Image (cartoon, rainbow, N blue to C red; front, side, top):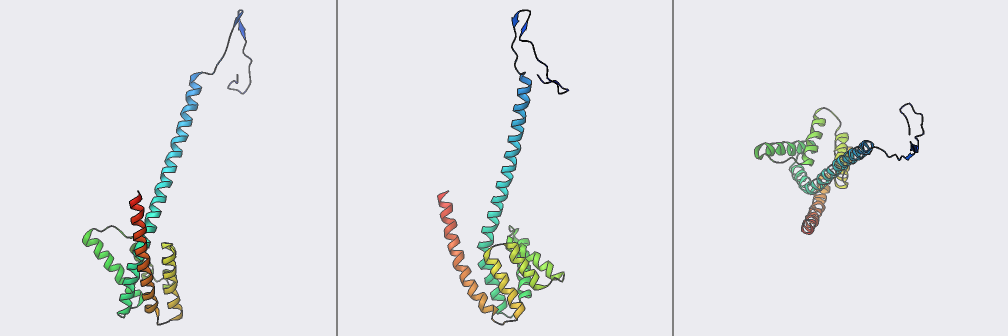
Length: 190
């Protein structure tokens, strides 16, 4: 048996001619069981939080993909009406904020990212940097391409951005239809 000071002592096998047996006390077993349960509970909480975070990330990604065609269409329409990228961006954000106030509408990730980008633009950060950061923050291939298109237009000063956005809007609408079908099938199988 191990003593508290770290030394071992040998217990007798007989006392007054009678056999003696030893076993661990239940208290030590209870402590070990309690520790095992605590560890299991902590692991379950951590796993649950990771699952919640993963669900939230998936929801965000789906929402971003779904809203993409709407964003590109709005931007194309406003730029076709003669607005600059920045003015069109600002208009979309202001319309979104008004709509949220009016209808107590749920927040939409893409418009929240746009609002954050507008704050950066108003703080004096370069448009190219802001639009590229917007694409990276949204972190889907559609938004990365979109941000790259805008940044490239600002760098090179081409006049065909509206035409490129029109083509992108057509692609985005097709993708949105496909996503709606996919999500409908997923919901049907659940």
